[in-house]
Length: 275
Image (cartoon, rainbow, N blue to C red):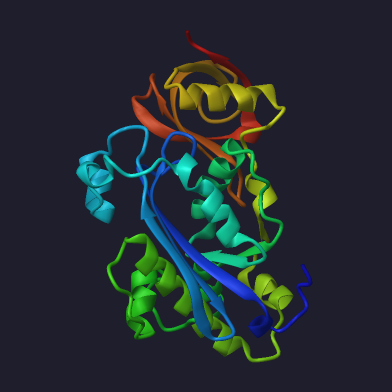
């Protein structure tokens, strides 16, 4: 894709996911929403509920309001992922806190043996920090109120996707008509490429063990070259694996400390699944 055209020359897909938990691999998307935008018009949309592998906790339900009863007869992501992949085709995607949503969707693309998109992504959280001033924070609902956007129902996928789109359009307006896509990406401070969220087909044996343990709810014995117990073997229950521009990490429950912690993948020196 040529990144040097003015922003108005591209097709955009703003999307949002609501999930059964905070971490990819261990949790699932329970609602997907997206809006496609070209030349100042909404040209298409997607929205559907999805059935997760496990029941959601009351805490998670309290965030998005999607109940276990609402998704009990919903399709599985495997039944919808090809539709999402086709919807993204030839578009610049955007999301609010895009690494979160890309982390979940990329795993489902890989599970379905679908190639990851080659187009770049925009994060409206990052863009808003550069271009939207005078707000107490850059949460989506704060920006919706500040920019007088019709945000619909907060924490529902299509409404949040559309709100994300209009935050982006507000940022684009401040950038000016001559701003290119390359310039917009530079202004957000981080390059977001789908390939950097590839996870499921890693040839790294430690990462493969982490994925297997997380998916199958198995404990692991892990040696971590960091923290107060550097180099010691520790028993963990994996919760999820996160690809992050600031460092990929495993979120896991530490049996010794009886708390959930973040373990950066670059500091993990050995992983063994407990059978």
